[in-house]
Image (cartoon, rainbow, N blue to C red):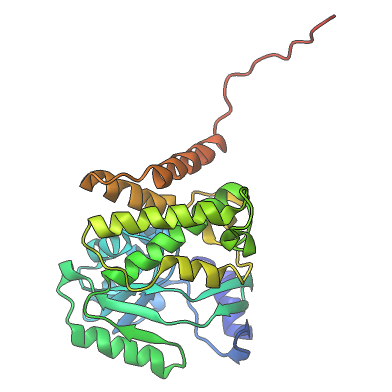
Length: 289
């Protein structure tokens, strides 16, 4: 962990989980990579923008093991593989939670993590299956897939659409995202974004594992604050390059139209630029009548 006080709090007080599950767990947390042994399996679940910062200090600890990326969007596996030179597992999770403190997390959606080999690292499927079984034995849910790209794209399309709209409206993932009764309802925009993402996936030859619109309807019941909403509220760099930006770039590379995702991607990049742009200091002019 990057904060010593976070590790200390977990070691002293454990982790409290509320929501769909209620329990308290004792954990062993560390912030110093030098204090850690080598590992057989690692799980990277940080924001995609923090992958290098999180993985580089511990990359050498997985020389004989494997790492599962359960991050948002596209591109995390490539970064992990470059840093660790070991087996990488392509992972997608629909689980969600809200962090209330360093020792308290509210668990909101109890769903499976989909896992498959990351092809460039030639990860054996038997290793993926073993990792999935280990996660299931812990009480969580995981499914091993020989090809996890359809699952990853299902989550990508859902996540890119919801996160972009949340970042621009500053609404949590609420009922507004699935509402299509009135002309002004946000559900129309979400449906169009998801439909566009489906067209991009189909153009790339990817048959989706799940329907992103159904995923959106489930998530809209939670009022969960998406990751990019947190970033916008705190004026932090968002994950948009790995989400809507990834769809826009893949569509452009393949010559597939994706005007909605491209427009929202550019708007969010503009929003990020506004946080550090002071502009020219124009003197106020008072008009007289």
